[in-house]
Structures are given as C-alpha cells and as structure tokens.
Image (cartoon, rainbow, N blue to C red):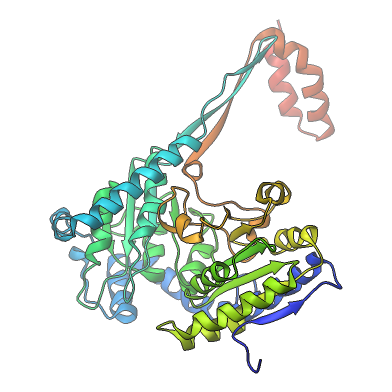
Length: 443
C-alpha cells in the first residue's frame, strides 16, 4: 500500500527489547521530549523570562502575560474566580452532566482512599521503636489546560486524589477564554470536586504564581496537572522550590495482542490515542495476520474521522504496528518501551501481566479501553510518559502525603548500639556525632 496510514515493522529477527528501544528513541526525537533538545531547548529561555518576571512583579506580570499569550483581559482584582461565579456555573450545567461528574468523583475518591498509605504498627524491639507517620501536604496547585479546549476531567483526576489524601487547600489555575472567563464546565466540576479556589491564569505564568506566590496567589507545596511544552518546562524549572507530579510528554498507548484479539477494537483504540495529536499508538504482536488486519482497520477507520488528515499524519509520524517473534518478545518490547497506557488483549492476559514491569496504567481485556481510565474507573489519568514509566507511576493520593520516620530509643537500647554508632561516626570523621551518644551514656 502506498503511503500507508501506519507503518509496519517486522522485528521477528531481532529482540523485542531492541525494536522497542529503537522505536522509543525515534519517537522521542520526533516529539521533542523535554529530556532532549529541539523545541524544548528553544523554549527554555522564554520560559525563564516569564518565571523571573512573575517572581519579581507578581500579579501585574501574571496579567500582562495572560493578555499576551491568551489574549484575555484579566486584572489583579479579577484573577481569582469569585465563589458566586463557581456556583452560577454549577447551576448552569445540565443535570445529566452533573450526575456523570458526581459518579466519577465518587469512583476516584473511593479508589484513592482505598490505596491511601496507612500507618502500620510500630516496629518495637529491645527499647527501640520505629514507625512511619503520614501527613498531607498543606497546599496543592492544580493546572487545568484551557483556552480553546477545556478538560474538566483533569480536575477530577488531580484535585480529588489530593482532597482524598487530606490536603486542606487545593487551588486550580485554568487559562481564561478571550472574554476572561474560565469555562463553566471546569468551574462546575471544581464545585463538585470540592475546590473553592480557582484562578484565571494559564501557561508559564500560572506555574510561576503557584511556585513563587503573588499578591493574590499564595505559593503551594506541589504543582500537578498536564500542559503543553512551555508548562512542562516551567514545572521542570521550579522543581525543587515546589514538588511536581512529572515532566509529561505526548500521550501514548501500546497494545499487546495475540490471535484472540479483535483487530477492529485495536484500531479504534490506536485512533483514539492518535486523536491527541501528537499521540503515539503502538501495536506489538507475534501474530502476522493480526498485524495486517489492524493496519487495514486503522486505514479504514481513519478515513471516516472528522479530523482524518491530522490523525493520519500523527499516525504516520508517531505510531507503528510491530511484529515480534513470540509472546515473550512482545512483553520484553512493552517493558523496554515503558508506555503511559498498556493494553493487554491476549488469551492469558494475567500471565502476561505478571511479566510486565514498566507501564503507567494497564488495561486488560477487550472491554477495557484506555477511555475507561481516562474518565470513570477511579485511577488517575495523570500518568508517566516518554518512557518514564521505567521508574515512575501514575498519580495517586499517596503523592500528596509526606512520610516521616519516628524513632525512639531508651537508655539500654542506645547503650547497646553506641559502639556501632561511634565507630561509623569516627570512620567518617564526625566526632561530634559520637560525642552526642557518649554524653547521653556518661554517668
């Protein structure tokens, strides 16, 4: 087929890991990932300029950059959305939408409370007591993309886990429309989620306001939420002053499938990921017949999409069907690629899952598309991208907790451990450390 909508890579003669690593490297270069050069390097200077300006001038700088970037008129006194506007937006929404949002909120809250870290019984032995205690962060900033598009689901997938963790203050920033307003659907979801603090600001200036504080916006402990390259660079540059969730790149899905899978459904899932534009969609399969069927289905289904041209271009650039030797090679490829979303459509999906080590979120079976996790399941859709699932996981309520170790010794326990403490201190030439023990034991 000339100029196919999706390329097919026959990797049966090489290890699945090698094929996936090569594909990941190619995609990262094409997409200008933050860890590389290209667009990220070109943008960093302007991001630093905005961060420095907001840090120096506060509200006035936030408003000026909002006028420049979002073409929206916002003044310092109107940066914060009043409670009356949030309530009016809530009342303006259709009841079926509010019902959907409420059900999603409950699903997210239920799962996040289920996985929340709990204090375990202290480890006590011979006068030594050790335990971990957990405390929620004091204040969190949530960035919700806006402007031309709007993403109320981001509020549910970020603010609700923070609130489930017990964070007392959650503030949302969202770019305003040209009229200076935050989309009413976003405001309504904030009301349902329990967020009372919303700001009309977006982009780098919003990240700066959360990180450094302004006359109106108090600084936060952690910033979470998706955004474009500039937002991600801003989060990267303020990391250390505040915590962040991740450096997120373009969205991606990798599908592991065998002969039992339905080519029609796999194609639909790949197209839904390409819809992000850019979005990567990869099929890895040992079944050559399935590979051909999926490639044909992608071609057929893409032609019927409203944005067929853009979706086709995204698929040709960022996506592929990869044929590997066997199931083990397929799983090895998935682990090497470390996708944001991993679908397993195989006869024995649980057996494959046992060998999966690196994925942001896993979706098992033909009735579990990524869209389930995006919206209703209860797990957050804020997930590691660009191969960072090798060492990072998806956002949960636990990311809004701080753990503190608590240690308590009695005199006999300190006396028993004193020789080891003093020996290590003296080897490291930290004599005062050893003396802090000896003085406690001196008569």
